[in-house]
Amino acid sequence: MGLRTEVKVSWCPGCGNFGILRAFEKAAGRLVDEGIPRGRIAVASGIGCHGKISDYLRLPSFHVIHGRVPPFLTGLKLANPDLIAVGFVGDGDGLNEGVEHLIHAARRNTDITIFLHNNNVFGLTTGQVTATSPKGAKGKSTPYGNPENPLNPCNLMLVSGATFVARAFAGKHSQLVEIMYSAIKHRGFSFVEILQPCVSFNDFWKIREEIHDIREAESVENALRLCRDKTACGIFYRKEEETFEDAVHRINK
Image (cartoon, rainbow, N blue to C red; front, side, top):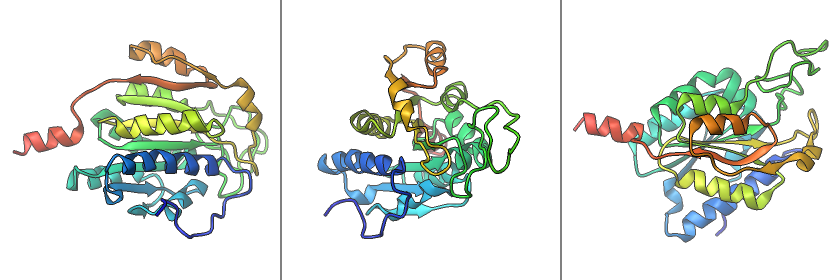
């Protein structure tokens, strides 16, 4: 039995979410092939087009309120440390409503994996700017141009203490599978920004021509320099540290 449910996929034709779903199926399938019961792989998604992904996966799945995927998975992991906890968030869901939760999960080194679907727009509500939208971008909420500077998600996670930070592109399947697999296998807070064009409200598929791979950095400082280039993809940085769950259980023995 595969990992896909019988629920009809209702994303717009050409949406980058299809590539993310397909890549995650393959990465999670590798875990199952390695002998990990599918019941140990728990998935949560937030509010937005990306949130439908939990309906399409034959895994323990949860659809939580706006911005709250990290704290939900933190509680899940504390209650059952044997779970592999994976979260899918959007750039609006994760970096507008939920930015504080992402930061705290990163600084704690919570043993969860977060995949950020970044299309620089609130797609489900038809085209408002988010925290990652470029300055000057015009949308339904900013008809005269976005007056704000955008966040760089990978930079934010690096300075917040994440122990695995990477970026990938929804249209580069093989690399996305490998990065997803590596992020899930990492013990500690893993964060992957996935560049995912919205064909309806912010279609930047041609960015594929600018995507280039980088080599993993040996320090946070070098990783910060690398990820300032928003078309650079790969694993920027990773290190091993005590996880939040290990610390809590050690203290409470």
